[in-house]
Length: 303
Image (cartoon, rainbow, N blue to C red; front, side, top):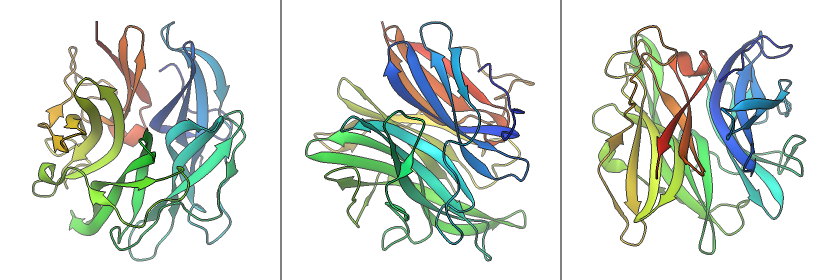
């Protein structure tokens, strides 16, 4: 993407691209940028998907401020899903707050807007946080309409494991439902328990619809993931038959022009967001360094 950090507040990173289609020729991409103090917040850029992602507008100052001291999003915010409900933009985001025993705590917040740029928190607290099914943290939600309401797919922490002398989190995908997209059931269910293996973690779900059901896109990594190799983040998808509740095999995302040494995504591909346009699908994703190298996009012809 032809956007680079170094604009006023925005010092580095463009993490977890989150696209809202405002019209066929106007897509707004929310992402998490960081300032010089390494604190993240939500920025945005408008692009034309029919003209090579030509940039139409840039919003490189935070569109939301951190929460008050002691709240779930006082240390940082990152977008994950933006949907239209009742004519308003509903932005579901990950809120970060510090802990003394591990690196962080994360919960899921909701903010709403009439124009997609000026947001107001739905609540001072999160719409989903730790609980009986989610004892450690929750993050990176995707929300989609279903019969009778909405379903949220999200990452749920399952523990912290020491790797190379550092405590790293493990996490899986779970889902829950809501009648209105605002208040969510307390319980939840695991999504892809058969895809974990020893030490694998799943995060950043994204759902698209196709013949035969829905396709669940997600990122998967092993425990020794920070320096590349076989355990680094990779992108996968699975076709899920909603009527039968059956999931197909995990399918790795394969690029026709595979990442090569020196590319921005040479050893890591993660946090994808998949959108549909007339000519097929567009996948936005992060490369090396968890978004430090920026946002990439790839296409899949469905004709």
